[in-house]
Image 1 (cartoon, rainbow, N blue to C red):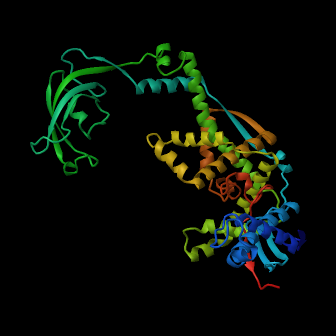
Image 2: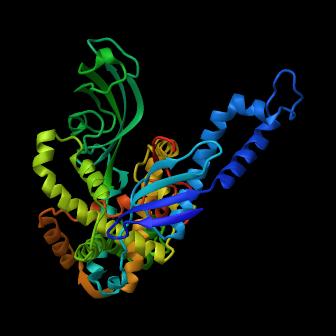
Image 3: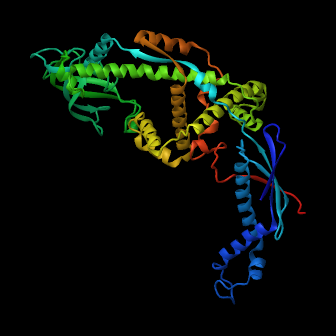
Length: 474
């Protein structure tokens, strides 16, 4: 194989590849040997069909398959040997090809620009830690205690009031007729929370143990029996007990019920929880600072085909007229996004950052925990949508890259209070949205392949999809 790189200036290159007739014939011979043992033709023993008979029957199919294989192998090798990383799919223009002939083709390819990542070490960003005052932890613990009160039996003849826990039996009718699901035993309601039927529990305020009370309420939109939806029902209630809430004692026992070792341990856990709530948001600010700094990096040239592809994504759902009006702005956004994506990907490659299957599954589990009650649906979604899983892998890949950049860059460490953290976050929310690529910074370099680092920048890519233009044989 002979390879000549033409048009060496700029990112667009023509790579001429020549494979001699002898090599092509060896590929074809190998293919005929493969199929000889599998072909059954009347009059011939298996494996004994003459080559000429095979050629007449399968010649076109054999040559087409061999040509496809040689194009893939030689184009990949030509790019690797010349250290060309393609930005998109190369196009092949066949000049000479055919049975018992040399193969010559020109591969037109847009190369990814060379990326200098040394300046990443000079990036400055704010790295926050949140100091949680003990008062904040105490306040959070008191709120938890209020949300899960204890109840004790109310004194005899005590009337129920808002906040009390009432236990009752009931039978219900609609238009004086019983219906499916119209009975309940030892039903519990905390008066005032309105968690049963709208306005139901308020009608039980003022009742005493042993009382009978008729309560009227409208059956809801989601009631199982459709013919009863929005119907007014009468509930005959028998009050079994009334319990008054009592203040929860915040002590070691309370802490143990929440899974802590003791009250001191609970305060420590709550402080960490509050810290994490703010730190996660503050870390996103740090990430945005880093991405904004990367935006400022100089890059001599950005592949036009990548810009065009990104503009199409930005224009999705827009009318042709609106897309045309926004084109200039979209091109500017696309250049920034692509530049940031290329820099992040180069950093990931040079530092051999990879996403393990364990890390990916950990992220899947995190997504599942965010949707309680829909765990199976989320799991099925990722199992049935490889592109969604690849996108998730891309997210993990980007986070690992940003974390590694943070370690090498210049952090301005700041310890802030909870109040200061709230102020910083509020100010950041007030800032206008910009075209920063932080939402899709690595999208162009990550989710479309099995390994994010293997898209167009992979040095070890084994296959290249090509667009082939066949011309007249010579």
